[in-house]
Amino acid sequence: MSDVIFKTQTVRKQYLDRNQIKTILFNRFSIDRGKITVLKGETGIGKTTLLNMLGLMDTIAFHKGDNITFFPKPDKPFHYRDVFGAGFLRREKALETIRKNYFGFMFQHDHLIDGWTGWENVILPYLIRYPKKSPSIPKQKAKELIESCQFDDMLDIMDRSPATYSGGQRQRAALIRAIIHHPKVIFADEPFASVPERRARRIIKILKEQAQKNGVTTIMVAHDTHDKVLSQNGISICALSETYKDNKNTKIISVKKGMYNET
Image 1 (cartoon, one colour):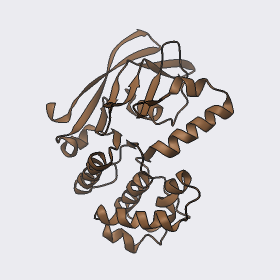
Image 2 (cartoon, one colour):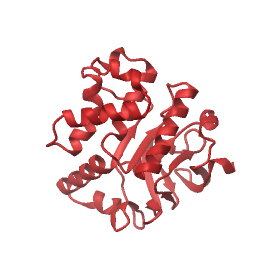
Image 3 (spheres, helix red, strand yellow):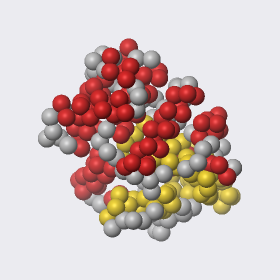
Image 4 (tube, helix red, strand yellow):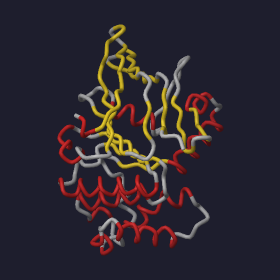
């Protein structure tokens, strides 16, 4: 099996800044399969921008030679250039297929729906992927996940609205939601922002278990303040750094791979 789950050529994002169109151009890089990879770099360099592009959470305009290739299986690649180059209906169908079948998401803000119960929130990705299944099936899976993650105290509050949860409880619910439908990749944007160190360590342990048992890849944005939690064996780094500006409106970003315990 291929060790790479994402491979890019150059890829760029254009944005409007003070009435000027500016461009961030990321040089080619790859993401290893079945590992936790942390996107590192100074504030504003484009870590979340890159995460959103890989996770199909943002529109991408491809130029000649640009591409992102996603390998859910080594012999079944999805070329993002082809996806975004297709007509509207075909593009939307492809985006939906990739997101619901292969991706899970964790964010700094959990995006739980307070008008629903905890159960209804965490089983949603499963029902989107398997719409013909009875809700009782993912609810049982959620219970098993909660117990295996040692979040047993959550079982007493899952019938309530997340509006009654603490910040840590909301983040734990978001973690269960991210993994319940067996994704190939979890995209995590600052998932430790509202949890203490001991809880962050537990989240990392669970993500490592998902990698070891199920081959799940996690791509994460985290600040330097969480290095103490992340500095352990088996966690990779993609370090982003600005190499140069070819003009005042374009900055070129290199992405260098390494391991956390090497820094």
